[in-house]
Amino acid sequence: MAVADKATRAVLPNGTCLIRRRAPSLRLKPLFFPLEPLMTELSGGPSLPQERRVVTAIPGPKSQELLARKNAAVAGGVGSVLPVFTVRAGGGVIEDVDGNSLIDFGSGIAVTSVGSSAEAVVRRASAQLADFTHTCFMVTPYEGYVEVCEELARLTPGDHAKKSALFNSGAEAVENAVKIARSYTKRQAVVVFDHGYHGRTNLTMALTAKNMPYKHGFGPFAPEVYRVPLAYPYRWLTGPENCAEEAAAQAIDMISKQVGAENVAAIIIEPILGEGGFIEPAKGFLPRIAEFAKANGIVFVADEIQSGFCRTGQWFACEDEGIVPDLITTAKGIAGGLPLAAVTGRAEIMDAAHSGGLGGTYGGNPVACAAALGAIETMRELDLNAKAKRVEEVMKGRLAAMREKYDIIGDLRGRGAMIAIELVKSGTKDPNPEATAAVAKACHSAGLLVLTCGTYGNVLRFLPPLVIGEDLLNEGLDVLESAFAEL
Ligand code: PLZ
Image (cartoon, rainbow, N blue to C red; front, side, top):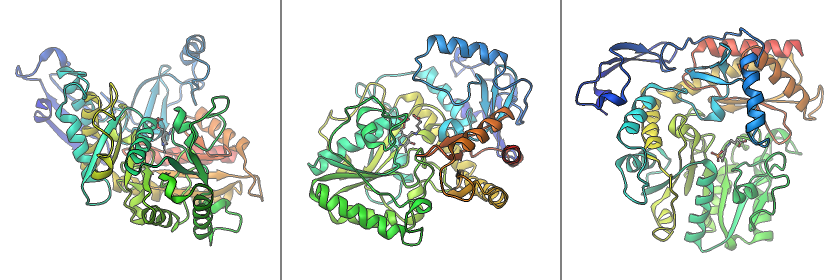
């Protein structure tokens, strides 16, 4: 980390981080460091202006050309929400090949919470790249992996002894949480919830609720997976008041009667559901399910892959109801854009699998670990939990005003910088995926990247990088408001 010693840093009021770097000394391997005698750069890479700039149609002509190449060379099953081809990204913007600069309300699906080119991530990952790219932790280990596991033990809820194992993707982490829970309990069944999303591999497709586009035509799926009701306040038939109690009672009844609690290895739940529609389970539901798991020797797994690492204004969303999961799965925000995922949990559970039973060629890659340490450093230094709470304040204020004005906004929910609105047909609760797609499209054309989600495809979700400047955040909300006005 010699480069770190030579850098001075300042944080701008808009949250971006400035670094002044001196020329690398001879002690470093000069070949691997760009020759920058004295330069100042934004966290968004050298001089990336933090502005919305639309200079062509979206997507522009160069993106269209690349899109034709994509369509010819890339498998049709791999879609892109908005085919503008990126050249640079950082802070709160994405710049494309045509010179457009989009405000980013997506963070690459909740990944780049520290920005897409955060200074500490780039610095640490670059230094690691220069030292070595890979050894395979299962062959010869390295310190970065251990350091990430130590950080995970510190940051995740609970003060019990914890251990971690690192992987490449969220789905892989969830699969491994199931392997670990099965080893520990010597049971097979896994319980998941309506609207849940846990990945696209065979086992995680089975755990995921929604057919299209995730599962359709891809079966048969892994056995011993059981789905139970979720306390979804906006759509609970008897209304939100008794939703937590009723949903928990139904879920517990189904587990007890249809599966047998004594056969259940793990209950897996997202403390705030991501792909399913940014659903916050009604207050009281999560603690009731966690309690049931504990009383029956079931491993309670919080899937914090989307909600973790400051996204909701806490290190982990389950902290809001004081939940201490037995295992917690993380990915996405953990490494500032590099692929890394983890299972963290009670040491006795994590140690249940036999030696050699867990792993993979690339799991906990050293460059990804270095990036994770840089991302965590950034989260601490810039107090990104506080930033996420501020994003919530600004967004909820503006969105509540829009909801007053446009009655197709049926629900406004989420925490921190994980906020969503659910769109319905006027005067009903019928899902309105058409309006959702139209608003998203209008936003894209005006230079604001927004994403949709939800079982019914009628949720607009907002996941800005936590380092986004407040001006850009407000400008993005202006664009959204105009999109509603146009509709
Ligand atoms: N668990 C809670 O949100 C990934 C999926 C996007 P991977 N969510 C984005 C898509 O359409 O593929 C996710 C998640 C939760 C697990 C996962 C899976 O994480 O890194 O995509 O495998």
